[in-house]
Length: 98
Image (tube, one colour):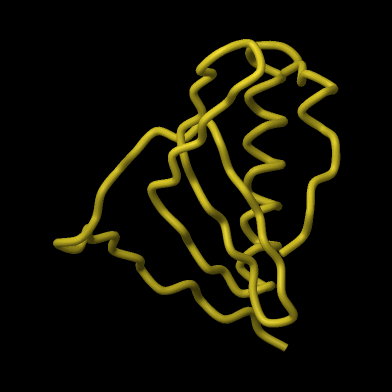
């Protein structure tokens, strides 16, 4: 069985393309898709945090898994170059699934 050749890929930004900074990502899962909600988190006081969501992106389960693989590869490369990324254990607490 022969391996199919990869097509040339041309990346083009559409008129609605935009970039933004997010320090908050919420993940909602259903049978059909994954929904990523990006936002910026600002701590208003010691006991109050505000998250301003600015973009939601739906992914198929296949694209979510492909994204996970690409992120794992890139994080491993980043950590081998710059050192281990340490996470605050308080941020790893499981949240609700919508």
